[in-house]
Image (cartoon, rainbow, N blue to C red; front, side):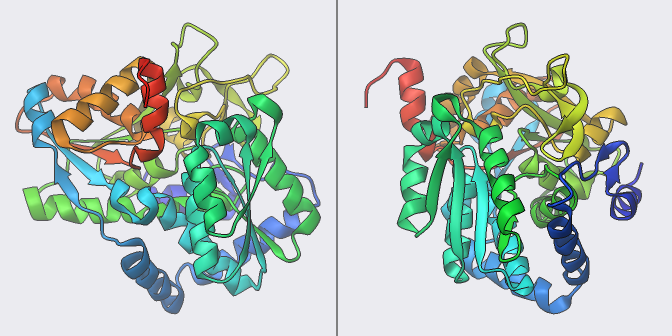
Length: 402
């Protein structure tokens, strides 16, 4: 299935194959349809696109480099590895790409307040920054457990004027934050815009987030042609909800020679209940307003999930990833905490780059894949964020004191 066909069907039906839709209370549908209508109007609007491109360049710092990871390449002895350096974006992650796009849309719609959910905190930080920059009030919902794991990002959000609301009790994670944000939207949608941070949720969010993050693969495609004269043989990205991965995949979907590989969180192992390996172990169900693969019990209720990485701590996944899995266009593999922490350390030592724990899952998959490839082959890893926020957590994991 070609990219144009996927997009056309989604716009017409709100579905990616059987996945997607709007599984939400009727009270929320008017807000979603208002957003969808406005987005379809502006997505091809030259003035809107030029304004967004200006912010991405002058505020976010795009374009990000395509960096040859020479140390890791020589250490592994296989494919030539390139990092797409989304960690060099303003605020340290890919999240600013989508936050700027959606907040510009919210302003076009006349909204006064932005609400958002966040797990690792990077989307919350990007939303707080973009809202401040563009003059809108901002409230961020975050699971109580995640606020403890990501105290630095909580402070950053508050520093930029956002209200941070911890939800879900001591075990609260991203799932709890999403539910709280949807409840807020249902009550206040007349003047409030819900800025979803991943390629999940009811239509039109998966489409919008994919489109705003597709700048990653648009740049990478051109950069590979400039540097190597050809496309990569494989692209690897981490997958929780799936925003950085769908952005990294998007402009390569029609290129059958390019393997698309997603790395999700195995936590303490897929043979234990302490994982977040949705595409490895999940079944088709409805969660957070969409039909997709879900880690769920026999009654269709989401299961508790675990991973060291707050940004991958989610029992669902975006509908387009669900489709790419089913049509076998993309492959998805699960990475344990131990493997991710090893990749975190190895990349820091060999490249002088401290990757986010989320991105470390993608690098851990590259550590497995690269040696199986020839030295004349090219492998891209999307380094979706920097690891400053995770240093204390990794130190604790390793039993070291800071």
